[in-house]
Amino acid sequence: MTQFAHCWRGRCAAKGSEMAHWLIKSEPSTYPWDQLVKDKRTSWTGVRNFQAAANLKAMKAGDRLFFYHSGEGKEIVGIAEVTKTAYPDPTDKEGKAVTVDVKAVEPVKQPVTLAAIKADPKFKEFKLVRQSRLSVVPVSDEHWKLIMKMSGGK
Image (cartoon, rainbow, N blue to C red; front, side):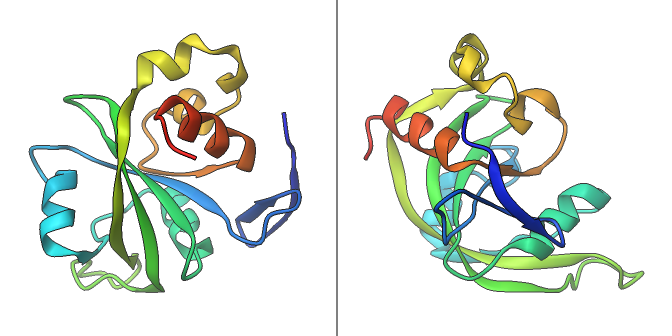
C-alpha cells in the first residue's frame, strides 16, 4: 500500500500526490448527495469531532472528496471538491469549529458500499474501516484509485 509521503498539520499527501483526497459523510435523511447536486455547493458545517475537524483544517481548495451516505445506504455515491478552505463554522456558538465549502463534481457510476470496501483486504488500513465513526477521513492515492475503479470511474 502506498504510504503517505509527508504529513504537515494533519494534511497527508500520498507519494507523488499534489492533491489530497478525503471522504466526507452525511446521513441521506439529513443532507443527501442529490441535495448537494441541487445546491451546487455548500458549507460543510456541524463537524465537532476534533480529529474530523483537523482533517477539515488540512483541506485545500481543489482537493477531491468522496461523498459517503452513512447510516442508511453506507456507500460512496459521489465526488465533490473543496472550493474554500477552513473558516469559522457559523453554526458553532462557541466559535471553535471550522467548516469548508464543497461543490458537487459528479456522481460515481456505481455506488461503492462499505461492505465491498471491507471485503477487500487492501482496505484494512483505510480510515473508513478503522475509524468508522469519523465523519471526515483522509483517503490515500491508492485507496482513491481502487475506489474509483470499483465505481466504474477512472
